Length: 86
Image (cartoon, rainbow, N blue to C red; front, top):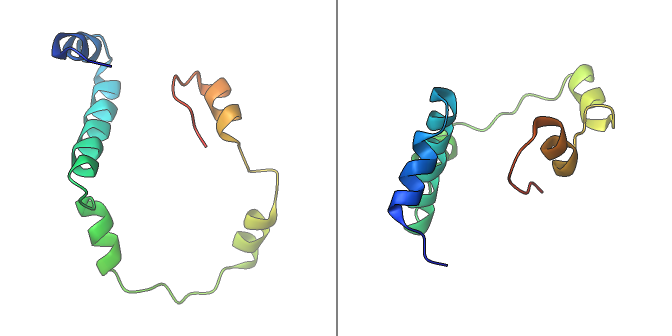
């Protein structure tokens, strides 16, 4: 499917200031991905020392709880997202 630049520009122009920032971040991600290059933020994470701290009781409780889990479909519906989430 061919995409015209004018259509992209028109859509970005119609976004709010906050959404324009999100669009820019996503486009930067797509550009990096198209170069088969790991984003700088991921490289920064790779260079960090490993976290040897054990989980707290509260963190273990949260991980094992179904209460805080939101599926991609639920998030899409709740927040009115226009993208498919896992």
